[in-house]
Amino acid sequence: MPLQWDSPFLGGRGADPGGQPCFRHRFCRSQRLFLPNKECFHGYSAGHENVPRPLLSQRRLSVSPRCVVSAQEPPALSSTDRIRLAEAFRLADQLEDRIWKGWSRAPFAVLLVTPQTEFLLRHPHPTADFTALGYDPLLKSNVYYRKRVFPTAVLATFPAVDGVPTIVAGQAESTTSKTSTPWVVTLLHEHFHQWQDSQPGYYAGVKALGLAHGDETGMWMLNYAFPYDSPEVEARFTEMSHALLAALQAEKTSQFADRVSAFQEARRQFEDSLAPDDRKYLSFQLWQEGVARYTEVRFAHLAVTRARPSRAFQALPDYTSFEKVADDWQRTILADLANMDLKKERRLVVYSLGAAEALLLDRSAPGWQRHYFSEPFQLDSYFPH
Image (cartoon, rainbow, N blue to C red; front, side, top):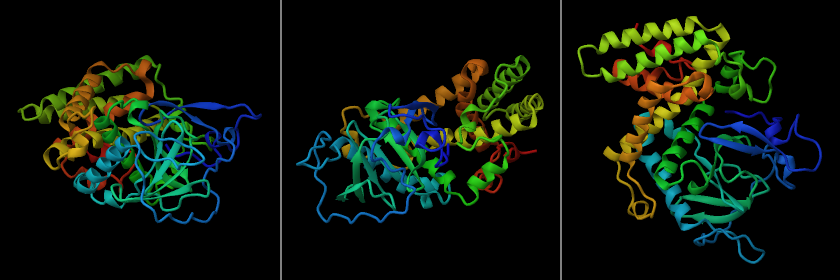
């Protein structure tokens, strides 16, 4: 979700007054987390100011098992964090354009949040509050650091440093991913959001949807007053979800075309139960968040068939195969379609629902991806009519 630079999250208009630490609850793309106001942290710069780039150090990075900040020793990325990041970068280099043509043109700036320190990698314009640590040959990037600002459980993408869409990620153990392989796959989910956010006209297009209703912080993306509690909307939603599940399960059978048509009719009836703005909001969320979840599944599957994990990554104590991650996500999506509770889960339904629609598009409308950015913020027009 894009945040405006005057957002309360970044300490602009609406930030809590006074000197007490303050946090505002925000549900980000990958998990529940709290994002802090920058005013809560003395010396923190939002990165939007015009500041010179720090000079790069010529020395190599040192590696230690833990990140320790002291007056004598600069902090260092742990060996485990370096291996995880290197795996994400390596897989992206090999696979991203196989999934989405042109994805490799997206920025891949990462701010890794550890208990004491934040490390900035692959960022074109580090701000003055970062100190150059050196060039890391494994990560193929200059590395910068500063004292921790964001929560250690964060997993989100927003213009965190100098207006550049940046993945702000805690270490795997501190996030809902918990272990290395799901964390790498989730990082690539966030990298897909970087590609969305960096598209020409993305922010103007989102604004033109007219869904903010005066909200200048971007919070409408999370707090939009969708009719989750409407019995009619919930009933139509359940019918649509079950029809989508039936269509996916009918793949490679003679009933597939009929099941796809039945899903499209159920989808039309569900949309007819919505007001025009409600319809636009849900379509936008399915396009943005659901397709990002679909991209995770595709990436994990391709990591099995078109790439091999590095030996260093496989040697991590918490390593699990990408095949297991892909299969787990696939099962979760299908189970969610069967059991979704719109009134209880609310906006969270868009992840599995949108991913399932994208998977159905793969089977019923091959090549739909080429329309993704030319006809944005909805998936309906990609289906055959």
